[in-house]
Image 1 (tube, rainbow, N blue to C red):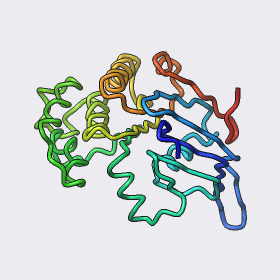
Image 2: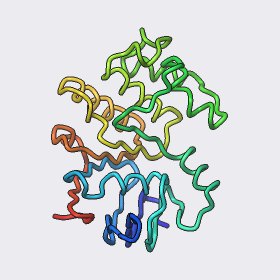
Image 3: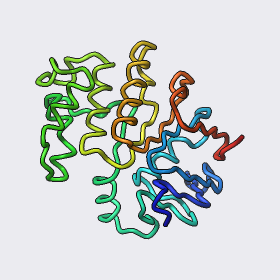
Length: 224
């Protein structure tokens, strides 16, 4: 596999089955993303964007594909344990709905991926809390924060440990324009500072201004 590529996907298909009805969603997609690249994927609801991101994030397997290379590893045929290790060690996720644990503090939410990996924090958590502008909120619980602050926590949690690939699914979908701008600036800063590869799904054209490349999807295919 080409070491310069973070994502190398060829001939990707995915179908959803509802009883006896098969609904094709992805139709032979090819996608290559270089290491350190910031790629935005846009398209109407239902075109397959989130399905693609879930496959790239190893949260689901495609119906069929020629190749699904992630972080230098061919993932087709990997055991679930191997997929979990790769997902845990190389990938970070930012979701529209945050998925924070409500009963623990901001600090512990951000540190959770390090605890799962049994890795030392080495000051990363405190640095990230300051970087995302939440220095005064470290010991608060998510329910005590604004929606924009909760998304900042989610982003900090996604990038702690500096994963090679950051996948973001509509990270500003629940935010107003001011908070959307702040999240864009945060992601852009992290990308520039750490050179992380970012693939982001969005409907918000405001979030495309700093991307290296913008891809458009329609009906399960990339279009010009």
